[in-house]
Length: 154
Image (cartoon, rainbow, N blue to C red; front, side, top):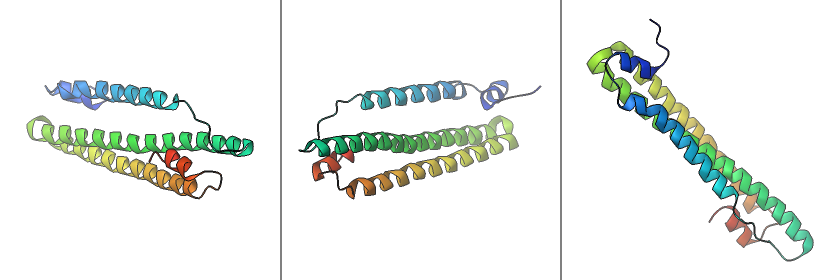
């Protein structure tokens, strides 16, 4: 018998419960995250600056920065989700190691630990991108201090 995924393995061993909910939680979280991102992107944009040229450049920059901040925050959030999934997999692996699976449970826990580490790396990449964007916004000569604060969501 070939087992293709962890929930099937747990179901065969008499488990269930949380293993059945894990895919639903992942899909539900992804849908909720997408809805929030769409709602945030549909906010009205306010005119910026005084002169005609400043408005055009500042508006273009604000649009670019809003999109970049959305990507950076999404990357950091995805890192948190991956870390959460890693913690769940570790808990499932350690919980099943003592009851049913033995060495396989420890292997599952190891995979969960690797998932957690990958989540840390993805989250760190999002934070680096946020810091880089903060530097770019802060040094932009086309934005006023109010525009900078709005771009950085301060």
